[in-house]
Amino acid sequence: MEEDKVQKNRRDQDEQATAGRAGILGTQYLDTRPFEATIILANGVLDIPTMRLNRIVPLTIGNEAQPWQFGMTTQTPESYIRELTLQYNNVGHSIKFYLISYSGYKQLMDRYDPVVKVVHDDIQIAREGDSNTIIEVSKTLNSVGSDEIFDYLIDQADRLGASDIHIENQRTHMRIRMRIDGVLHPVADLENERYRIILGSLASRANISTAATESQSGHIQKEITRDGATHLLNLRVETIPTMYGQDAVLRLFNFDESMLNLDRLGIDSEERAEIDGIISHPRGMVLMVGPTGSGKSTTLYSMLNALNTTARKVITLEDPIEYGISGISQIPVNTTAGQSFADELRSVLRLDPDVLMIGEIRDADTAKTAIQASITGHLVLSSFHANTSAAAFSRMIDLIGVNPIFSSAIRLVIAQRLVRRLDDATKEEYEPDEATKKWVQEALKDLPSHVQKPDLNTFKLWRPVVSDSSPFGFNGRTIIMEQMVVTENIQKFLRGDEANFHTEIIEKTARDGGMVTLLEHGVLAALRGETTLEEINRAI
Image (cartoon, rainbow, N blue to C red; front, side, top):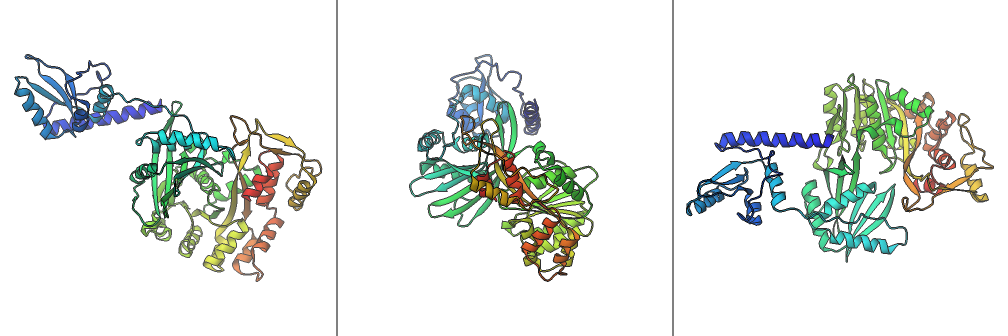
C-alpha cells in the first residue's frame, strides 16, 4: 500500500539521521525495529512520567554481571543521563545507553503506556426542526478529549463531505455549523470552555494569533485516514474578532488530483468543445465568475490539469494555494502581508510561462497586467467576482475603463453555480401545478434553437425524498455553467465602438449568438431530474 511505503520511508530517514547523530556524539546507535514489537518490557525500572519527561526507555534489566540498558533519544537531557548513571553506580551496577530514533522511542512507549482508544459516535446532521440530534452531537463533542476535539471535528467534517466548518461564539455557548452541498447546517452547541481548546489548536496549526484584534488568514494540511485509505486535506482558515471572541471559518479542500478533470464536471459536448478550443490557444484570457463557493477554483484547476504537459510552463499565483498539483509552479501570494498579485505577476512573467493562473483579479493594476500578459503570448486564467458573464464586462470596465486591449485579450467568460444534486435512489417524480408550468415555459421561451427543447406542456419534475442514507434527499452537487465566447460583435462594445453599452445589451448579443443562460441551464437540469427548481432559485 502507498501509505505503508510512505511510513517506511519516513522511518528509514529517521533511523539514518539518528545513526548519523550517534556518530557525531560518539554514542552507540541502536535500531530498535527488529525487536520493538517483541522485546520483553523492563517494567518497574522507571515510572511512565519520568520516561515521557526525559524521552528515555529501559531496554533490559541488569545484574551484577550484566549492565542495565536504556534507549535514549537526542531529546534526552544530559543532566538526567548523568543523574541516572550516578544512581546505578552508587549501588554497584553498571549502566549502558544506546541512542535510538524518536520513532523507535514512540513505538516502545506505546507498549509501556498503551493509549486507550476511545471511539466516539459519528456526527449526524440534524434535519430541520430536529433539536434532539443537535443535543446528542453536542454531548458527543463535549465529551471528546482536549487533545482530540479539533482533529475529531475536522475528520467528521471530511466524512460528511462538508465544504466549510463555521465556529461561532455566542454569549452562552459556541455554535458549530457545517456547510454540506452548499447549505449551512447546525451541528452542535458546545460549552464555552471548549472555545479556548479549539481556538488554541487552530492557532498553533494555522500559524495565527489567539489575541489578534483584526481578521487573520491561515492554512492547515492534514492527512485523513479512513477505511484503509489516506488522502490529504487542505484547510483554508479565516478568523475575525467578534463580541464574544474570534469566529472562524475553515474551508475544506479534499485534495485528489484525479478529481480535477474537465471530464468529471458534466459539461455538455458543445460547451466542452468551446472550452477545449480556447484553452488550447497559446494566448488570451479566460475569466471564471460567480460568488464564493460556486466551484470556480475547481473548474480553473481542472483547466490547468488539462494544460499541464511537459511542453508547457504553467505558473499559478494564489492566495492561498488550495490544491497542490505536480508539474505546476505554484506561488503563494500573501495579500494580507502586503504582497499584491500585480507585483508578483510582473515578476513571474520574466520566467517565460506559457500558462498563468491568477487566483483572483481584485484591482485595476492586476487586471491591466493580466490583460497585457494575455496579448503577449500567454494564456491567462483567473477568477473575478460578478453574477453573470455579461455583468463581468461591466465590472471590468468599471475597474479599468474602456480598454481596446481588453477586447482583443478576453476570449471566454464562464459564470458558474453549484446546486445540490437529487439522490437518484430516492428522488420522486411529480406533476407540477399550472403556475410552475407557466414559470418554466417563460424561463425557456427564448432557448436558442441549437438546444433541444423538452415538451413544455407535458413535462414532469422531481423532488427529494429523505432516507437514512440520504437525510436531505440530495447526494453531492452539480455545476450549472453559462459560457460566453467573446465574438467580434461583443468586442465592439468593449472597444467603445458602440455607445449604448450595458450588461443587458451584451447578454442579448451573446444570446443572439447562441449562449444559454445560467437560468436556462438550471431549469433544463431540473427537467432532467438532476436537481429541483427550488435549488435553481436558491442558487441562481
